[in-house]
Length: 157
Image (tube, rainbow, N blue to C red):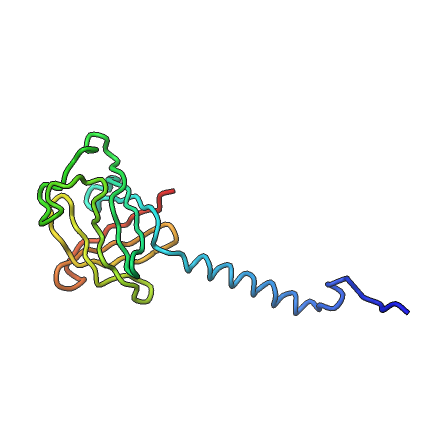
């Protein structure tokens, strides 16, 4: 005697089970999209002029988040240096300059780090958070977060 094996998978699944399975797949797909990370390349947009200025690569190192300028949009500034920067960053080329330093994940945002304004050379407290998978909120401030400036950077492929 040979055993009878039914290979028709759909034969034993009722419509409600199919519905629950479909909802589960949609939930996990949506959850995965929402869990996107801040790492990657971002086009910086000046909050005062609305002009794109640079491409910043955000990366993780030793459990913290950093960001460095990898490209300048304006070709006339390709050799620009950080003339106003303090310490070791003084007169370094803007391309390659680490401007986001030591952010730590805290819920849906990254904070407790610093951001360098390469034009003024000033360091500010900083936090970043994803507004959507392709939009990053970057806030630099003095003292507490209400006193500062916010930029929205767009993901750059």
